[in-house]
Image 1: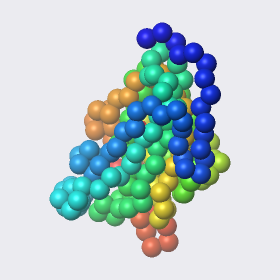
Image 2: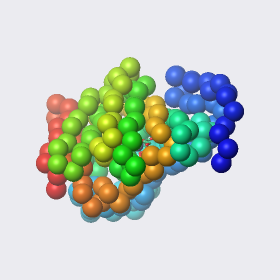
Image 3: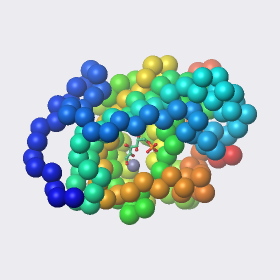
Image 4: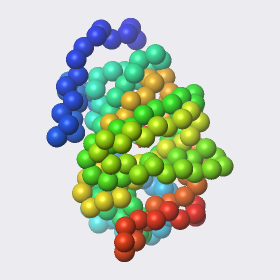
Length: 185
Ligand code: F6R
Ligand code: ZN
C-alpha cells in the first residue's frame, strides 16, 4: 500500500465521529464470547436480542507500517453478570504504544503486561497512554455511552488471542456506589 497523501480529517467532537469515514466495526454481545466471567449471563444476553456493545469508527488511514490510523470507539452502558460492558481487549504483537483521548461519558482503561495490571479513569479530556507491551481493554463505567479517540501505529497489529490466553489481570464490576476492580477469574 502506498502512503496516503496528506488530508484533513474533521473531528466532530459532539457526534464522536471522524470524517471522511473509513471502516466502522460493530461488536455485538455474540462477538464477545469467552470474555465475561459469567458465561450464562453472556449467553442470556446473546439470546435476548444480542445487543450492540460497542462500535469503532475509523478515518481512512490504512493499518500498515508507518501510517498512523485513528478511530473512535463508543461503548454502550451496561453490565453482564455485574461486569461492566467493555471492549474485547488486545495486545499489539509488535509491542507499540498507543494513546487514547476521552471524549464523552465515563470509562476506564485497563492494561495488563502479563504480570501487573493498571487502571486509568477516563473522562473527557483525559489522555490515557498505553506503553508498548501492555494489553488494553476499555470499560464503560457510567450510565451513558463512553467514547474515546485512539491513535496507534498502523503496523501494531491486534492480537485478541493473547487476552483469551493470559486474561487482563482484573475485571471491572458495577457496585452500588460506582465500580470496582476484582482479581481475574
Ligand atoms: C487500536 C485500539 C482501539 C480498539 C477499539 C476496540 O489499537 O486499541 O481502537 O481497537 O477500542 O477494542 P478491541 O480492538 O479490543 O475490540
Ligand atoms: Zn490497541
